[in-house]
Length: 432
Ligand code: PLP
Image (tube, rainbow, N blue to C red):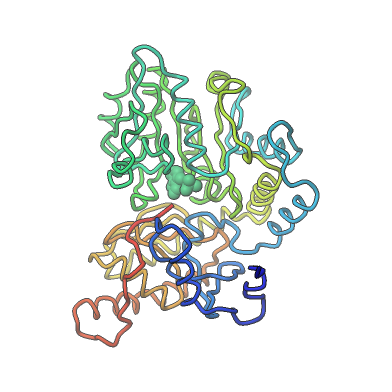
């Protein structure tokens, strides 16, 4: 039997196989849910990754808002290696110092009051699954409704999918867990009139990342806090995409204390970690012993990865970098002719183009050595590593007008030779 390890490209040498061969093997061995991958990536360092043909890319997507410290960050590599070399997995019959330290650290960062608690999972959807169960535990006779927003994305497992709004994601799997209603996005009056004693919980993303980086209007979260508090409903804030420094704050919802918050993506810096934080005594007591569980959640290696990520974010003041680089990017992007609107906060940026060419722009950017993605026909999203420098961002800003020009030219047929990007395999959706 051949050793698959021996087929992996070795650091410092050319890839053993080119992309064509790998993609062919992908097509015959991997389930087709993601479509055709855009590239076969073999290594990364800082904000750059390299494909199997040796081409380098500036990663402005960060594994979809995940690689907070970029690729192969020495502190993350050391923490994971050391923990795995000491104690890797133990099950939740046991605990570890790393797990306890991470829970304490998250409670402190979130400004959670006495009695608050953490449940660890491995992904965003799992964190929201746990939050969905929390919502059910706040249900009772006459209190059965769970509210989320149009455009919401909370994950792909059945509970989280019930909270997710997009019909194309939901319909193939109906019936989904019941009781979920989707309210018009950003409409404070609609929210306030919907929240009454029949509501068990309200789920909100402070910024809808998958829907194209849509910001909730000022005052919305505060209004949700007041309405849920007076109705006895739980306010659950999904910070899976926006949390852990992505917006230049630890949490995008800072200033509003929810009953529960979910985290994943950036928390482990690329290592799979998810978390549900419950705020205060009552929400923290809803899931009693035996009511929920996981084999891997909160394992020492994942906890060590998250602790290392948090520690680098803090010691290098990367939240300040997120604010500065994000502001620079948004300002420069907004000044471009082809850009109708720039949305977002920190390094979560949505770019609304004037034309429906976003998938072609993604493909052309890739050809030019930049990884970005599109969340809709005219919408681009950037969610780069939080270590991205102004200089690195500047190389993309310098290249983008040319990329947009080549896409427009090839769309209008005026320049068939100019970077005629194929959109094959470039989906218009984020595919978390
Ligand atoms: N919640 C939000 C706001 C997300 O953006 C995502 C993924 O994009 C999820 C939940 C699901 O996370 P995961 O893909 O880790 O299951």
